[in-house]
Image (cartoon, rainbow, N blue to C red; front, side, top):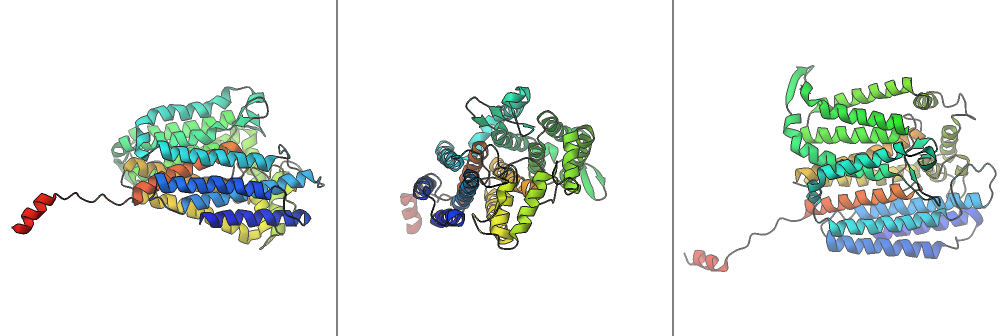
Length: 447
């Protein structure tokens, strides 16, 4: 399966070059070789340090990562060739090489995580430390000046001189998932207690609503101070789902949905940029050359792709601003068509399903909560960004895991896969065989 993932990247890379100018890309041998070496090295590391892990997790992630590099190369070459109407900004002529280097870093970090963390429950010891670290990472951009934290209207970055930037929220999500898992394992018996029963649903006691209200308030603060709707939704959604997994109380889901809808309505009334997102979602073609330009270009690109797409390298996805990051799914939709994007969603779905399968099988409650939450937040992230660019829900500015340009998202996604592999190994590991005393066995046989 790893070789199949590498072959998929190879053929896609070749197709892009042939579609652009009728010849193979000059950097194809080196890029494929580098990516193949690190992925095969990761495969050997998984077989060594997590031999019982689900064998599909690494190939699925590698396939997505490889296709992301290919699409970024395709968009990079479109800008280099001076196509009219080119709207992609913040993309250098070596963007695909940079993405490949980030991929190498992410896969190396995956191996490091597997070597250092022998069991996921080891992380439970650092519940509150990682919780504090996660909140710190979320808060840092809010206190930085706009010149060192704002990109495309979102105050979620740490911008360092030389053009290097980090999105700390990607790593904060992982740290907070560990905190939520540790906290809920310790408090789940209290949170599972039922209060009043309304319409057949056992509502929690009023005194137990504190954690949900705190998480809700924190997500609103992220939205208010950092203008990041996507991070706010992922943060709150992850907490509510992990709370539901821990308590098995449907009432927590209902309360979470109501609080999220209420918070969205409240912030839409208070802040223009939030209301504008809803207006663009409901009426995208009212101002197709203004505020709705990006959304309209993405929708028209996917519509132009039709069922089977224009072919890699033969469309015009570069007409959509930020297509290399927030809207990269529309580039795949235009050049691979509905069939291609459904295949991508199937790969994401398999990755999530395998994660949830490991969460169900593992016996350790902390590992179960942690991986269940991480698998869900991966699914939620894909749903939010794909739903946003396709017009299903209001658009939020988050990345598509493994596909979008950017190092923070890519490295964080590989760390998530490393944790999935580690828990999957624990879940699938056979039970140790009982040690028999040979002397006692002889006595019993004689008797």
